[in-house]
Length: 143
Image (cartoon, rainbow, N blue to C red; front, side):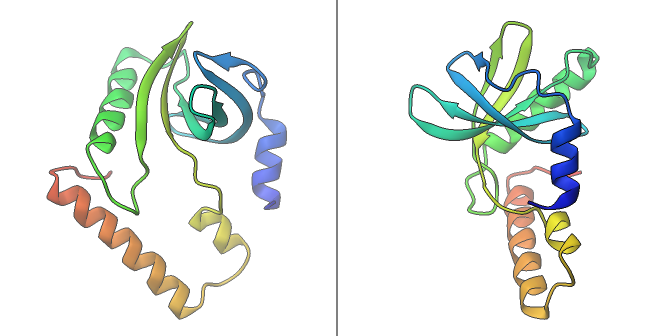
């Protein structure tokens, strides 16, 4: 595991790890971002691994609205380079988005390992451009 990611995971509180939100068993913390924490979880109904993006409870209502708009916009897209959104859920005081879980490095994590070769850089750029094109065709602008 990348040292920066390991450090982030080790230093971040794991308050939900081991708990169940609705029908999702929280397995581990995958990362944190501007709109909350992302957990790896198991869907107990379908037996598949998913990602849960949890909105912090302290976020203002405007941020909660953006959170839900993000999920609705992304769920309208069907593209191999765009994350599939399964649902928006509420359990206790937790509002979260459930999506497919993608196991692998982010581009940032990959860059920490070293420079990209030309072929790898082009492959990533083509995938990003394809996803953005599909989003733009659907009237969605990624910010």
